[in-house]
Amino acid sequence: MMAFSTNIFMIFLGLLGLRFAGQGLLSHISSTTISKFFDKMRGKALSITSLGYSTGEGFFPILMSFVIGYVGWRNSLILNSLIVAVILIPFLWFALSKVKNLNSETDNSVKNSNTSRSILFQDRNFYLIALNSIVLPFLVTGLFFYQSSLAEFKNWTIEWISFSFLGFAAGRTISSLLSGQLIDKFSALKLLPLYLLPFLIGLLSLLYFDHIYIAIAYLTLTGISVGFGSTIKTAVIAEIYGVKSLGGIRSVFATIMILGTALSPLLFGFLLDNGYSFLHIISGGIILVISVSLLSTQVAAKYKYAIESNS
Image 1 (cartoon, rainbow, N blue to C red):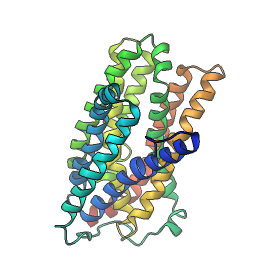
Image 2: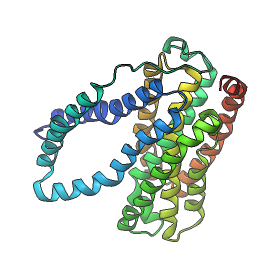
Image 3: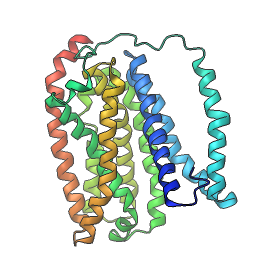
Image 4: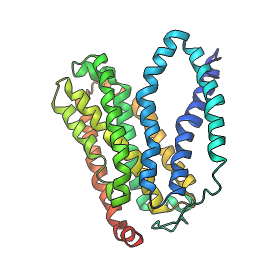
């Protein structure tokens, strides 16, 4: 649809399909299936599968910039479509043809897997977990969306910011690998109040220092929190609400996250257009991250003994 678009309506449908079936649904299916199939090794399984996301973030922008330069953006989208049709879909059929049982090994969740979306909103801790789930994507999307303005504010070049994203990819990859082992050892709930700390340190360094190497440090620390968060948040949902209705429950959190990423560019743009600077935005982000981390300790404390007894 995007490759052959000739008007704004076709572009809208194309972007809707890419966001819904690509960024939203593919990652949702992957994390949900892994969480339901693995219990004792859930953390490691999620950390390994999340490497595909971080690898794509670091590799595909560079690859596609070359492809678009040679064949143009329309042909690059056609090439992407052919790869999905000829390679990805047949590979999935082949890989899943040998899987006979996709049922969960066991269910050691606190709520014994009977939680449904109908009673989810009656749980006070749902709102605390939802707030934790949205804060990092919200702030990161807003900062990334206005990275050129941020570079100008810090007297950095946009080329340097782009290069510094290698630190983001490296931080996310390393933390994705480590997160699985830590989850399996300590439980995701215990890590929930802690995974935002690297991002907090990154924001503090961004607030107080202007040296060009702070860009690498800030993005690397951000990548570490993103890598930990992508694994920890899915595992937390499975630990508390179980895996029976995991797809439906996780979709609620995914919807909240997507709404947050859609709203932050609007809010950041409004603030920047009305006389506020990144000094105010970063300061507000620091206060928000600290508040959410402290609130998350309540969720971890409430379910601490239940998780330990189940394990």
